[in-house]
Length: 302
Image 1 (spheres, helix red, strand yellow):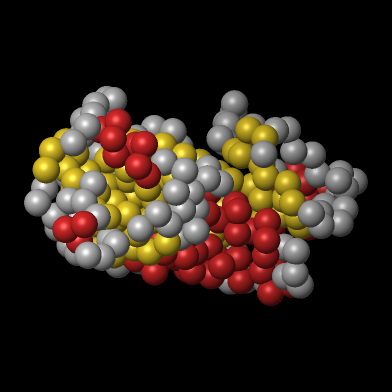
Image 2 (cartoon, rainbow, N blue to C red):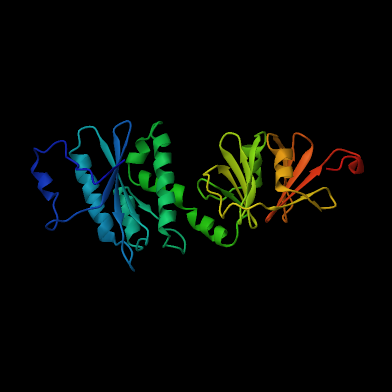
């Protein structure tokens, strides 16, 4: 990707290229993403304080795409406009007819998104487009193919943000996307514990394959470890056995580190992993609990 790259029209021997003009010293903030085979994505970034992007913004970018494609030599240009403050309703008709994708999408009641959310949408689109272009993609190049492609990838962010505000239970660390207990099991079971995490805001695990698990309040976070658990390093309270006897954080670490996760259970108030050495490791907000599962219980206390 390149920012404000100078774009040159491949065929400049036509008088129509004179229409490629604007007010004196007019600048367009543009990001260029190059793809194989011979596809370039031109991203126009809009930042308005207190207002949304207008149909004229979409018309302008549509004219740029039309000109670039008319005089390109084998390269096809796709257009995307990013305006975190949203778009007015009149933009949709121009976007679909010109095959210009919009971020955020025109959907639902929430037409304004925070900048980090728009960046997450953009990241998702760029990654997905890389994979999509590896297959036959002629329909993307015909209106409104690319518009619909981006819309389908980003339309559910509104529901995601609403759920996050209402307190979603499972969240992926690397993307902030909502997840599920099933995806957690598929991702983490079988991995070994490399270290136990304790901070002022969370408890959790670091696992093999650069994975992590965290309990932050009532939320379960997991996925690729960003090495940035919330809060400052702090030893959590630790309990052992069903009688909830106090024990040292070091005792828990020595017991569980190096062990594989064999099972998982979410009890709502706390989360538990079963380990290969017949230990259950429970996570409460700011507390860890270990129990040996071997019977009889009274003869296998920790």
